Image (cartoon, rainbow, N blue to C red; front, side, top):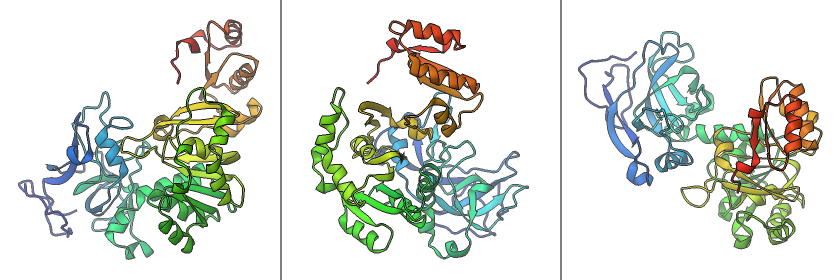
Amino acid sequence: MMTTNAENESLWPIGVCPNLGMALPDDMVALTLHRDQYGPPGEVVKLEKISRPRLGPVDGNRVLVAILATGPNFNTNFAALGLPVPVFGKGDSATIHIPGSDALGIVVDAGPVVTRVKVGQAVILDSWTRRNFIRGYETHDGFNAQFAVVDEIRAIPLTGPLAEQSPERLAAMMLTHGTAYRAVVERLQVQPGDSVLLLGGGKGTSFAGAQIAKSLGARVILMGSNPDLGAALVERGIADAFVDRRTIPAEVFGVIKSGEVYGEWVKKTEAFRRAIFSANDGRPVDKIFEHTGGLNFPLLVSALKDNGRLAFFGATGKGMKGEYKETFFYDGKRFVLDARWAWMRQKQIVFRKSQPEAIFSEIGLLPGRKGLIWGADAYAMAFVKAALARRAEIAVIASRTKEKEGIAALERIGVPASNVIDRDGLDLP
């Protein structure tokens, strides 16, 4: 542990490299956002002096890290704007939010049971938390500050080739590559020979995703608006093909309007699929990694092969506010999705034409898990029976005026009346 001084009220100068003989200051400098002061990031995010975090009696497996470098993240824009959800929630008494989900630092204090790292060691900080929240966005104690307290498992020692990289590079790596890893490896489950389309043109998280997918033996297709960057990444072997978004007519992109006819929409948007298929030897793609939001989303779904997969980690759109209304066609029907709830809560949405038991086996419906089934007709009833046989807890959306007999049948097989949500009372897009 470094020397402490209860009377020391001075700040460490920004950029100072700590050494074991330095006294820890009482305060620190941090970027801050104050409660209910949402707005453009350049106006509401401030640099100010606040109290330095300290290890407490319950922090036996945690470490205090002096930040050497911290990277900017797009989620700072979201936090400042209060989007897609406000960072100060109901029941939350915090008044200050510190953004930042990437950092590199030096351990300057450690709890008594810490074994993975030691004081004086350089570490990369991982923003993932034990509650599966992103630090600096879903928590108020981000890394855009001079100090941070983290679980020791989130302090990753610099070893091997990592130690040869600059602090700035290391401090800008973890969130983008961690996000890409969860999408490409865990959600998309990319395998050798898969074709993977990535939106973003090879910058930021799409660059990380391309690296990971390529290392797994996939055919990587990038889509963006910078053909020079795309060509450079193809030349370097990080991608196999690049699709210039600007070559596709602007009228192709957009949210599917209510009442739009499937066949007419397919004809209108054919130029998009033609461009994607051309980059993939004339075939639909197996998997897609995307973050761009409503204008692109329906087109991307249409470019997937049957039973393909799409993973997204945002809906940034053209402006800072994002495009969260995701629309798409499946089996000729229009669907609408609020991207915020799928992305922020790590939801998986599976479309399958199969028997209930096969679908429930695929998604792993276990006893006690909660399920929602739409409708009270014979097809929906088969899903309800299969779910109840697995001892799952089921709620059903059905019309109390149009599906009276079906609702009565649901109650006879064990679905409580309180678990039936009246379709007539829902205002759907």
